[in-house]
Length: 353
Image (cartoon, rainbow, N blue to C red):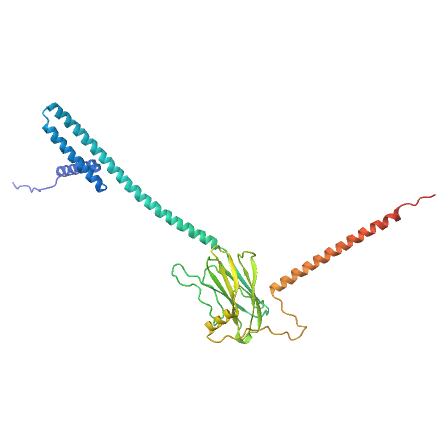
């Protein structure tokens, strides 16, 4: 008869049960003994070592005692005290672990609080900056196109570089690289241009440049009125300057808008020395004399009115009509008052003798 092949299995189910049971017992013992391990400062380790030395001295004293009953009682007390000490050590280790966890949570909460505080300050700053500043330039010559530019000293927080380039007299039109800014609202045959900065940044400065945007052959001596709308201490709209440009000097510096730390704006008009310095800096040539407005050819010629002048004239005309109407009503009321006493005697009957 042929023998059956036998397979030798080293690890069967019984051995695996034994190993798993031993591993489970070991894990259980580690969990029970874990609180009794010293976790903390070296002072607690030295205290535990001193406690163990005292327990050993008590054991030696118990061995030297002659009375077995007293020795047994002392042994029992030593065992109870040892168990109590281990329990207290376990509690101390648990409290130390909880303290460490609370310290970590406190540090995490502190970091979150700092982040929220920084975010809140940033949001408040952004809300405070939501105050637009508008610059309006009006020309006396309606055919004159205007190039308006606000040269700021702001930089991008992410790159640390300026967003808007410096004013370039060679460019015909200037635009803003800041988002939400409204620039170059220029209307041909109307003679005005506007620039709206969407934010008013604390501690910033804006230099106003005005240039004739027409071709050099079409440039004429023209006067420009500059208005600024913003959070001024006294008013919202202010006439900040009047300049005259011409073919020889087609652009010029008007002045500087400054914003303080409370987001209040102010304007300082540029001096002639500052304007000449800007001309030499950007054109590398001696500055020409300031342009003068051209004289009118005939007394009968009427100056061209700007939209602001037309609005002012219309308001003045309406006010004159109202004053005239009030005077006519007062005159009519006086005439009525004077006619009433004169009519009263004639209406009275005459007595007969």
